[in-house]
Image (tube, rainbow, N blue to C red; front, side, top):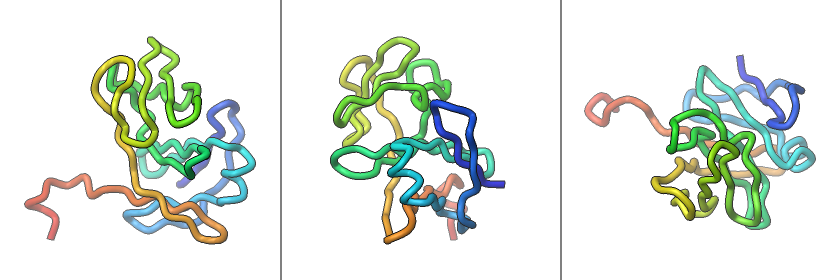
Length: 128
């Protein structure tokens, strides 16, 4: 089951059916909410509307390897983890405060949807 959670509340709604490698979210709902946590087959993706466009990222902070960025604050093109203040660029994924980087995913938009391309998690030698 696919669900979309507003990261500031427990409201949820259904996503449009997704392919094996993509997650689809309503563009109008995303623009209204400004941020959505999408869960699909055990994988979480945080979608955020920024002035530069829509960003999709793994909400796991590399500091403690826990899902916390969905509760983080955004300022321009950065996101700050609420646990210890590590700050990451939403353009590059690199740490500005702290170390490491967050995983960003490609996002494409249509008139109605934001489509996030998920990478194949299988080892390269199994991808044929």
